[in-house]
Length: 370
Image 1 (cartoon, rainbow, N blue to C red):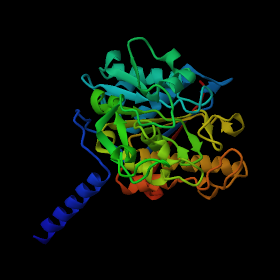
Image 2 (image 1 turned 45 degrees about the vertical axis):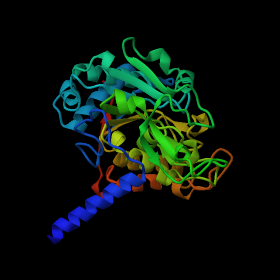
Image 3 (image 1 turned 120 degrees about the vertical axis):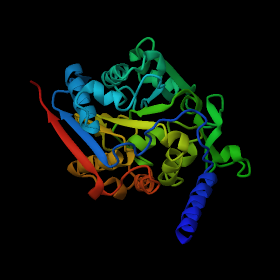
């Protein structure tokens, strides 16, 4: 009886917490995976010296990296088996690209085309794949529209970035994260201003999500890798989370959004593009703070991957004579008072993945030209 009562109270507390954040379960079919997925704590890092030349991704090395990453992550004997272990005919798969860094630091065509090839091997036709981003104009500015293959759906939640961010045409009023955080001048008593609604692409059109972030520094969040590519790329009304260098709530905002059931249940695979990366001045691709890391990361666990990525960026900062992100102070290109990398640890506490280094298994694979 005592154990039963304890379990009941724990369940009730979790339900109350979800309700407080405005978390509503998905009305659409969800995947069997979700976060942290089949391999909590596992991160595969595949490096290839020849994967980029003269700022152009090299197809053959990228293909080898993709094959090795997927088979090492899943334990499958071959490329096709790896994809079939996670996807199948009947799935509708969304691929969330990352264009924020501009043409010089965004998701790459070569990586995307390999993902599409893997999905095809798993029995998912092009018509059941949606490549998407929050803003159409931002995606076109990065040139991503030029390399999405014919037959693959290409969709957006909003036309362009605005300061208002309260448009609802592309968003689902049944799925939202509510937080007592508004922009100056807004009415705190109006729930619309306190909510960030999930885009309809995620809630109504797909049952599985592949997250394709880039390895980058971010002024307010510290880093923008897996977690932030979802939190600020899948919902509206996000600029309230980091309005000014001192009005910054990314540390809590990011995990609160990603823990929404309709997101956490559908995000089954995270492939972080670290072929090119940035260690300062993010999220934009400032050439003076970019380097060719020549690595792709694979995980079902976004927390473990983000923790791994944070350490990689901090190591690069140390080599450049900069303090760690957590201890950094404002300068001309990174103006925020505190870069809130704590969003990764909080996400771990919410069960989205593994944060403890002693429980993270980073499997490093080095490939060379043959």
